[in-house]
Structures are given as C-alpha cells and as structure tokens.
Length: 300
Image (cartoon, rainbow, N blue to C red; front, side, top):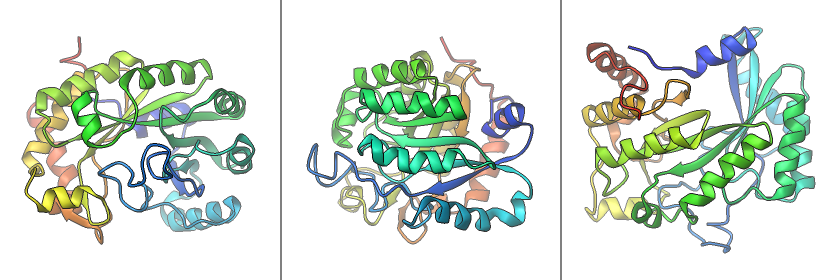
C-alpha cells in the first residue's frame, strides 16, 4: 500500500508536524452574489465549505482562537493559515492584502492556503499570490469537483473546464502549489467517470488533490433533490472502493491532502455513516492494505 500523504509531505518540507488553522475572510462567491447565480453550488451549505472556520473577526484574533483549539495536541508545531469559507480571492486586492499578509507573516505560520475558484484569479490577484509566495509557501485550492460537463452544469459550478486548466498554469507561473478538489459520488456519475476526473487532474499538473465524499447537508439545495429521490448517496463500501480507484488513477507525485471529509453533523442528512470519521478511515486503511492500493498504478 502506498500513497503520498499530506502529513508526510509537510514533515519532509518543514521538519515537523503542521496543523491547519481554518480562517474566515468574510468572502462570498459569484454563484451567490448574483454574478453567476444566487444559490451557490448545489451541494454547498450556507457556510460555503467553511463549517470549521473561525467566526469572522480580525485575522490576528482568529489565528489566536484557532491556535487555542489545537494547542493541546500541537505543542511547538507550525501552522498553515487556511482561508476556507467561500471564494477567498473574490475581493479587491487591497482587501486580500489586509487578510493574507497578517497571516503569512506570523512566525509560527509555515504556509498560506487559499480556497477559491479557477474563474476568480484575475491578474492583480495572481501578482499578489506571487508576492506572497516569495515570503512563504502558498497553496491555492481550486474547486473543480468533476471534468464532466453535464455534472458541472447540474451542480451549478459556473465555469468550463478550460478555465481550470488556465488557472493551474497561471498559479504555477506565480509559484503557488495547486490543490484540486474532486467530489466522489456526484449524481449520475459512474466510478469510471470519477476515475477519469482523477486522471485528468493528474495530467493537469496539480500538486495536490482533496478527495471528498458527496454529503447532503440541510442548508444545501441538494437536500431537496435527495429528498425527492432523484439520486442516492454511496455506501461506505462503495465510497472506499471508488476512493481507491482515484488514488490508483493519480500520478505518484501528487500529494493526497484529503481522503474524505467531515460534514457538519448538525447539518448532515446523508450518508449518515460519514459522520463516524474514525470508522471511515479504518475502513479505508483496511481496504487499501488488503488490496495493495498503490498510487499511480492506473495512471496513464
């Protein structure tokens, strides 16, 4: 069994354990503010993917509060300042500077991570990312989810695949590391379609991947689709098997930033088994060991 974990990559790079501090930059999204829509992506909750981010406050205050939450296990570890909620480049550069510089310049921060969309990276933002990357490592997370046009339309992603490809190239030119989000279990997608997405992402040049189980959350529009019986969610066994195929379909150089995700249990409708993260990770470990899952063995 082999796959390239984020923990091992960060230890190699920084020589210590690194923890994420989830921050809220107070952003919105073009699929919510009327530019591309008002309801967001169909799977997105009211928190915009930032259920575990600190409540809005000055960045230094958020950092201190987030550090206190992990202090017992972190010790003298270093941190990634992670701007997680909504689209964290969807604001004037001056505002972004006021958020990102105070975070990245802190001594205990090893890297900055910015979650955003490929269609929200204009020239001035890319120039800012290049400047930030001269200070410390910058990860930029892109919400791709799927390469298949019909699914992208269904989930209301709001941009076409070439926009993603262009963003990956531009971010690499700026010196950033790209992390691509892929959702497993999207309505209408077969395992083979999901493997094709993983393989495409590998060819795109992404540096890392976050693999995410499709959750149905109460405040997401997907809840109405689920309750109307228009799709079903995956069983744990199905998820683990498709996850293994994705790992096998990714090149060995790609860092696996996440194998599953934690939906807010107060919001979670389905699949309920996903609320037990320990059981999920144990099932993944067992399947990977029993089937000798090796990253890249299906990549071509």
